[in-house]
Image (cartoon, rainbow, N blue to C red; front, side):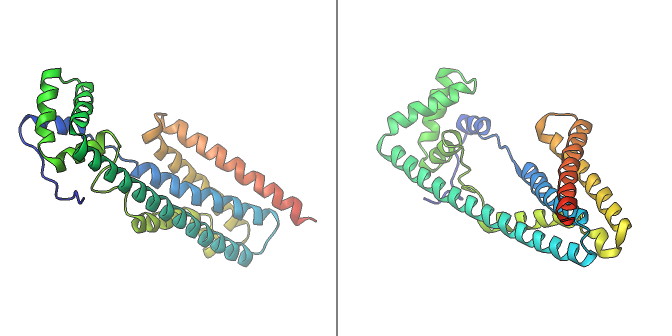
Length: 244
């Protein structure tokens, strides 16, 4: 049942639905973590190659190969995740539509309970539920959001869009450690890569503070320390294996 043009109830039911449908988004979180995945993976790879005393050309080639492989893997994983989520949500919406059509009394009582849970008086909750239930599309929209946690217009998102965004975000993070090697060589390239990556990690950490509740400086410092230790570890491994 298409819901994109679902009419909405008016009056008191509309006010209750506006209370129920308070959106929340994870776009910023996904963006920050996508960039972080690419940045840390590429940083560790480049430092491992530097530890093994690889040539500038080898670092660039391996870095670009790692960037491409990682970005493709992330994009495919995101596409599969969103596609499966949409398919699951479509099935749940069909099941909910069947319940509304064949057991309206039970569905109404569940809706009353949800509305009362928002702080609405029982009498007003019953009146709002009746108004919403008179419109099957609006009722399904409300049940989808409140009972299933589904936005009927999105149903889990666009898998192609999610894959493209994931590819771009991962690639942008993974490109940071390689940029200095594209413009210079030797110790200056290594130093520039380390500085750029630590700065990028700090920005990523600061970005995570917008959804983890921690102070920006704390999240930034933690991200720099953890990312730096991971890169130092791979540098050490590269040094060991490069000397064999």
